[in-house]
Image (tube, each protein chain N blue to C red):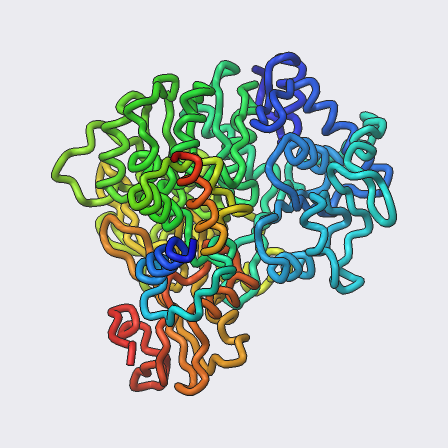
Length: 521
Length: 85
């Protein structure tokens, strides 16, 4: 194809010109949509947004299940010059309200079942227009069918630039409110162009779209596919969590490229009955978001020996910035996790030790990343954004907060974190955000949340809750309470009720004792 | 029916809510939407139901709509068992 496109919707447009009849998206509930048709839908929705004065500098919220409409809406938003903000439509209304208040949207495309999240918003946070799917236009709301029937924008009205924000992805925030990672078109396209060079997709490929769109794995699924005219198979939340059905889906649709967090791949190896299925079309199995326990990876690669496996690493703030091919077979005796590997060509890496001095290979330090993929900052959080960058050698480096060591030909090896962020099923969780929710419960005097992981097992999140003994809530009550404020992947696995939290000599919460499990009293 | 409910209740308590007082797990306490049962825990519960009651559970039958509480799950198991015999 011609040279790289400067903005994401240009990928769709170029594929619509080259492969108008090839399928761009398959929605299991809805069937296939061609590149020409998807591009047309996006153009008309962009025209609608333009007619409402929505464009550069504005945000379009997406609060609906994964489907063709959602894909058309995000391309339409970007074609109009706006950024899209994908929201977790399964999240509790309180959390959605916190995001909508932090980052007001000019319009929100919303599924009728999610409308309640828009109630009770302060006037400043209320979207001016609400586009509802599957409903007739009515008081205060426009039907998607109507918005997507608008005449497209004229060529001169299209002004999206590479440096404009393409999307904002909300992730867990340590202060108790989720934070929005702002990413530009250039951030995304620099990654997509790199991935194209390494993974060599063609228009014959069939990509999975397993991750929700608010998860940065979706950037590879959506845009690497559209860059090369390939087809992306949308996998919704229910199917995405069901290893047996998912394995059948991969086989039935002859998917060629799979990308997800390791946890669901491990579950497919365990529960997916892979030995009975023909998944031989799969040529690439990519995983990212957390460490793949080696025992599970070995089990998977024995059942699926044919694809090439890659461990991709990178926080939402940079998307993928290092990568490691996994040579097969996984040795029987191996227990060490695989390295995160070499830095991608479009990024630069620097390891800084104590006091911010560069360390020599073989010594541990914090991984810093520079280059066109690095995000612009956190929405509405100038101070926190500034704190995450350092200037060195005339460049701006993002501090990932991940402790790594560089080991010769293996590249970088991930060692852990110094702060209180953990990963579960690929999702980032700030333990402090869970604590701040627990503190809102009337019976909770104090709360401390720790994560424990044993080799080969999932991370366990344990909440220590200090209450008066005579006013102790039940574990179920605490579960129900957290479910009202946090997505289920952030819900603690266990609650331990104590009279007092253990303290260090300086009167701080003694997290070390709690992590060892010695705090229950 | 009541026996099935009690079996499910004690399994959920023992596996996923150790230390919780049984009276707090009501028939209608939401299990999935509350995070009491994670997706992996749900798979574990389904395996238990299949083995304990000799039933075959299809993936499409375990959505949150009809599989979210002790009462829902017990009713599902009873329907399944009746369908078999």
